[in-house]
Amino acid sequence: MALTRKKFLIAKIESSYGVDPSPVGGSDAIQVTNLEVAPIESDNVQAAAFQGFIGNSTRGTLVANKRVSVTFDVELAGSGTAGTAPAFGPLLKSCGLSETTVAATSVTYAGVSSSFDSATLYCFYDGTRHKITGARGTVSFNFSAGQFATASFNFIGIYNAPDGTALSGTFTVANQAAAIEVNDTNMTTATFHGVTGARIESFDLALNNEVIYKETASNKEVIITNRAPSGTAVIEAPAVGTTDYFAKAAAVTTGATTLVLGGTAGNIITLGAAQTDITGVSYGDTNGVISLSMPYLALPTTAGNDEISLAFT
Image (cartoon, rainbow, N blue to C red):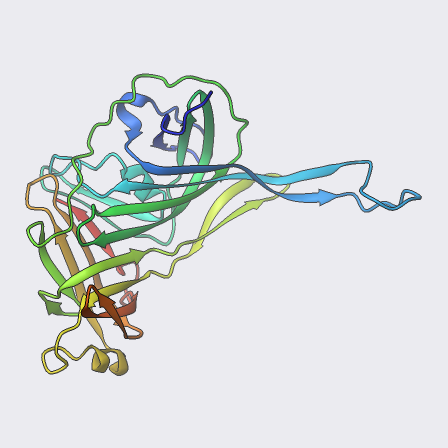
């Protein structure tokens, strides 16, 4: 009997695309929640030859373009040591983000448009190992008042037959500090579209990478073909005379957004979208208090690859 609670994940960046770098439990373990694997996805091809009677072909079905998808959440926290990447750094890099480290100070992630990293993921389902090579994906960051900040990942990778290989090493998570509640004490900066001190009820930012699996006669690869970062901010509605978000949306102007969560070195998260473009405004109700729900785009400058920034300090 396999138990749902006995699932876990380890991951490691590949030196060569699709080549398993053999992640181990001691150094490559990542604490995740809501881990779900689609163990085999495919494009089914059935022979169309006439056979003298109607019905399915006696030749069976070709299971083509086999791949695996996996989704999970990670509590958004630093490594616990400034200048050391968090345990889930390989996942961020495999979502089309660069990693820049300043020793003893910071680790910062930002978009790239070429030379994408990939990772091998081992997903263990209580005795069954799903090895997913060549994995690339997309991620969204979620901040909701009264909840832990999270990063939600969605990966596609190359299919390998599941096996019963046991974990190498122990599942001991390192470089993953305690999660931080989104509240007035821990959120030291809350700026949305240039307005500091915005009463943010929830905020999400998704990379929205376009990720495809492409297989040819001599190659198979998961490819990131585009990204379109966007999200939604839900804010306690200010008086229009104080901040006119309707005018901001109508004017098609951008403003800087910065969220800083945490105050202890090694576990401070700064999420930025310097060119936030509000695309709409609608009213909501939160326990009798009027709120504004504002979808937005995170735009790049002409330099490119600067739509978003995620820093751990």
